[in-house]
Amino acid sequence: MYTQSFINADASSAAAPAQVSPIESPERMAAFDRAIDADGRIEPQDWMPQAYRKTLIRQISQHAHSEIVGMLPEGNWISRAPSLKRKAILLAKVQDEAGHGLYLYSAAETLGVSRDSLLDALHTGRAKYSSIFNYPTLTWADVGVIGWLVDGAAIMNQIPLCRCSYGPYARAMIRVCKEESFHQRQGYEALLVMMKEGTDAQKAMVQDAVNRWWWKCLAMFGPPDADSPNSAQGMRWGIKRISNDDLRQKFVDATIPQAEVLGVTVPDPDLKWNADRGHYDFGAIDWDEFWATVNGNGPCNRERLATRVKAWDEGQWVREAAVAHANKNKREEKAA
Ligand SMILES: [Fe+2]
Ligand SMILES: [Fe+2]
Image (cartoon, rainbow, N blue to C red; front, side, top):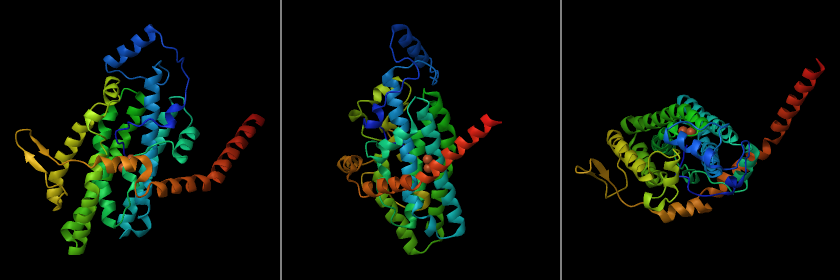
């Protein structure tokens, strides 16, 4: 995944964890500020302001939700992959996303919130996840484009998180980023094969997928900096390291040369190299469409949530069996 700039308060942030005394004092605040100013790490046992804790719970849980919801659009294609090789790669990728979700739920739990409460917020529609997963995957080319562009955008967003001030989140992101790099490469390679060796119909399918995903990927970085009032606080706390607009520009600059190698264009008549700035200029994003999707009215919001809830309900017996097994082991340990 897949972070977008997580700017929306939601009910998952209302949880009030209290492993460490929440009471603020000038001494505690000063020690926290010193650690942040020195670019140090805040660990679960350290005192932290409640606002910092709540922000992290919201961001990490939304990130975890994005990982597991992100399995769904591509999961649809596992049984329809065009070859055994592509199927094995896609299976590995989708399993990686499940693993990312697990690392991130674990990181959120270190802040004193329960995994059950986070999943409940997701399943009841109170929590957000990245809007990019509320669009359909219409063709096999979409799977390649998701790897290349969606995972590519995720890498841009997530590499700075390896330096996040909260230790468990930063450490989780190191492995996540290595796996995202594989995701990006497998998508690009699948597209390259279609563009260099495919039929005209396959090449047209790739171009069509790029046309449908391009603007949505640019929106993944979140609203313009001028409209992101919470970004400054995130920067101050060392949670956010690079602004939405700067990340978006880095993504465009890195991706256009890749599109040229592939032989596809992006659907932006305003895109052009700006020699003075040393960057590509690009056109305006349709933020109305972005917000409609964030607010639950994208093409697949209801379908994604329903699939998640069904998986949760159908897994109830597995969770019960695991608890029964753990209890049996405990009883046997005590009896021994
Ligand atoms: Fe991921
Ligand atoms: Fe990924």
